[in-house]
Length: 377
Image 1 (spheres, rainbow, N blue to C red):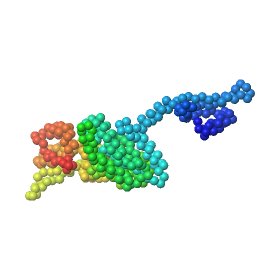
Image 2 (cartoon, rainbow, N blue to C red):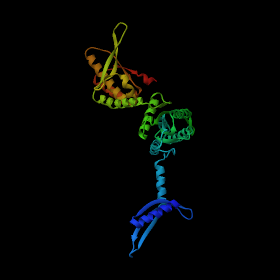
Image 3 (cartoon, one colour):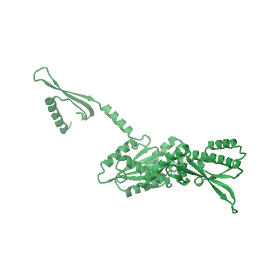
Image 4 (cartoon, rainbow, N blue to C red):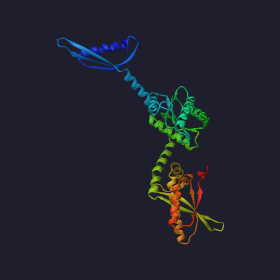
């Protein structure tokens, strides 16, 4: 016990005798043999049978192993089991503490997501993927400076926390990471290339708490990914508008499919003689909020989210039914329909198409399939 602790203990004893309080404390102590123990100590006052008899009763319990077990659990709860880096729980606390103690300095986040990591996992297995994550984490660590700390945020996402930093410093770090991750990684006999996309945000200008800084760095990362991957973006408020637009599309395009808000316009293909040779089916979205929305404003989202599959199925089946109505009136025209690669991979589309052709007594398919430009890139 140090002199300071001994003086505090004497003061506590005086209070015990004067007020009859009890006292409990947990603390590290050092034995005369130099061994460190963690004790639970309890002190209380007991009045004796005599007139002026007062006893101070003290007890101590060695809880060193319990304390060490708690510390091991704390470390496990805050450490990623694959890479040994701080995990999501730990980095949240570290960022919050860094922002709280930043003073007049800036705290920065470099948020990176590996490109095509899921494909590597699917092709070679999770054990191979874990080894790749270990190699990637070491590669990223080699790109960091003294005031920067790396954590695995989950999956194939990592966060670099930088204190007393600047935008220029974070951009330089991002460039080093991008350059390093463009180089191949050798896992066993297999050589793998895996790039990444990076988003950057700083406190306080991009957020004044942990959640907002991480969220905005994540938004910037997805902006970089949309721009072609293998690059970094610094967060700007305009990026949030794209996020809100994405969320609006996600909610309302699903409703549009359920509530028959999609309509098909038919654009004629005319010969040099002015004759209508065929038609092209173009889908439009009749939104109750925004009116008639052209396909350029929602098709790319539909392809990204997977909604292009049910949307495309609806278009093809509706076109076939419309052609049947025209043929009943003596109008025989073929119709071209744009189809994405994701639709062609959907086997249920061909099953549904065969069924509707059979129901409407078509001997052959009256539509021409045209691959969208994005399918050919």
